[in-house]
Each structure stands twice: as C-alpha cells, then as structure tokens.
Length: 337
Ligand code: NAD
Image 1 (cartoon, rainbow, N blue to C red):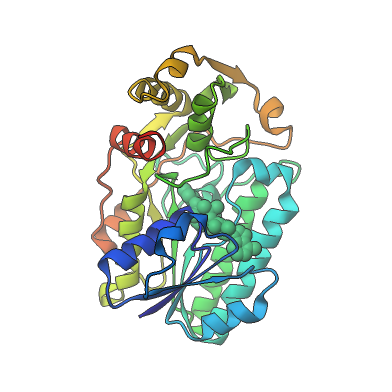
Image 2: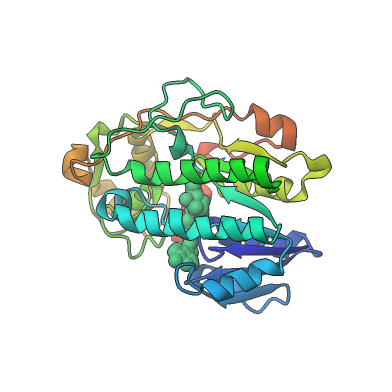
C-alpha cells in the first residue's frame, strides 16, 4: 500500500511514519511537509520518500502525489491554541482552505482519506464523556477567536461526511485528545504561549521560568501517549472488514484525566529526577494568570474534555495502555536524558 502523509514532519506524522517503517514492510510512505527536522532519521529509508512541499503553494506537487497513492493522511495544520487567537486567518487558510483542497482531490481521484479531526470540535459541550454520534459541538461567539480552529475542523468533518454520502468518498475521521510524547514541540525554542501545554511546561522548567497557569489551571484534560494514538491509526489503516470506513473515532485515554495544575505539579516533581533539571526544578513556582492576560480577551476555555472511546474499542479492537506517569516519564526522558 502507498500511503501519502501530508504533514509527515509533524508530531503525529513523524511517529506514524516511524511505526510504519519499523513494522509494516509492505507499506510505502510519501511524506510531504515544509519541515523535516523531526523525520531526519527516516530520510534515507527506501520506503520513505520525503518531498518538501507547501500545501498552500505547491498545489501541483500535492495533487500529483495524491493521484498515485492508495490512502492519504492530511496532517498538515497549525495546531497550537495560542495561534488560534494570534492569527485566526492563518488557521483558516492552512487548516481549512489548504485541507479542503486535499479533500476535493481525494474525491476527484477516488482515494481513501483518514482525516484528523480534533477533540476541540466538541468545544464547550457539557457531556460527561464526548460521544462521536450524540454529543453536540458547541462553539462560543465570533469575538472569541479561538473557535476558528474548532469550527474549521468541524466544517471539514461535515464536508468529508457529505462527500461520503453523496460521492462515495471512503473516509475515517479520528479525534485526538491531547496526544503527548517525544517530538511534540521544540521545547528548546518554545517562547511563552507558543506551544502546547506539556511542551510549554517542559520549556519553562528547562529555562528556569515559573509556570503560569491560565485561570488557576483547573481545566481537566485526558492525556494520551502517542504510541497509543498511533496504534489506533494503524488499526484504521488496516481497516479489517472495513471496520473504519465511514466512521468517526475519538482517540484518547479517559483514564489519564488531570487538571492542568496537577499536570504542572507532576512535571515539576518528575523534573527532580533529571540531572539537568534537578536544581532549577526546586526553584520553579506555580503562578496563575487570567486567560485574558495570557491569551488575550478573544480566548475562551474548555473546562473538561473526556472522550468516550467505546466505539474505537469495539470497532477497532483498540485500547490505550500507557498511564499518565509513564507517558510523562517517557516524554521527559526523550528531552532530558
Ligand atoms: P504538528 O504541528 O506537530 O504537525 C503539523 C505539520 O504540518 C508540521 O510538520 C508542519 O510543518 C506541517 N505544515 C504546516 N503548514 C504546512 C503547509 N502549509 N504545507 C505543508 N506542511 C505544513 O501537529 P500534529 O500534532 O502532528 O497534528 C497533526 C494533525 O492532527 C493536525 O491536523 C492537528 O490539528 C490534529 N490534531 C492533533 C492533536 C494532538 O494532540 N497532537 C489533537 C487534535 C488534532
């Protein structure tokens, strides 16, 4: 099988590529991205063909590669909450417009597509567990710019679903819930507010900066180790008995629920185990800041986000297995050992 991974140079794409190259000899990858620093170790592999391409500029290249693949993963996006409020039009351009074009080509060339939706589409839904079939997708007012990411993804979910019905597009949508692991972000460069929460905290500790919790850090999130996420993606690619066709799957670990404050406390405690961080970790304090001061007034938060994973467990025969202490240890070992 020939798999086109667009955005293969990112966090999920690099881990997915690594797993395919390591354990699936009959699958070949064409990897498109504007960056390749996270996939340097794969570049010389004979089943891994990297092409530097921008989905907004190199349209011919992307369409050409799409024509000759069996399956496409459009993973290229900007997936960073601070960017949703800093540059909402950029989010629309890359995450929505760039990916809409890829979806249209998948329809035109009759290709199977596995598309990353997001836990963010559930927005401020108040269900105890978010369910793919029944939960409402709730966004805030237009002035709260952070919802542009959620709405862009939601709209593409709806477009893909409609093409499935009308044009027979073969698709699967997966919704990652806070996937974490090595190579999540470049913590050595991370500026305050520029990366995802775990990366931000790791970067703060590394640079000896206090950890600033947004609104006290009472938000609850379920953290999922990348290998568990990738294991679900492999099951989706394998698609035994067409189990993934036309389906939406939450892919997260409901047992790994922590408040953001608990996450910060754990990371500081764990940092004490690494020679590089031992001394600095003792000095890090946890402070709090309003979301308006941290992200600006156009931010709006999600208090709790727990996936129901019954569907993925049943249809894909998949279960997340990495607990929260283990996932933090593995991630921190990668950066600090
Ligand atoms: P990432 O930021 O690590 O990777 C995205 C990749 O897209 C990067 O390598 C980047 O260089 C590339 N890219 C950006 N703009 C591009 C362009 N114009 N042309 C070509 N490549 C471009 O993100 P990720 O965590 O790997 O996420 C992958 C997908 O999964 C995204 O669609 C994201 O929204 C979705 N997702 C991720 C999570 C998570 O927990 N990581 C959660 C929900 C949804």
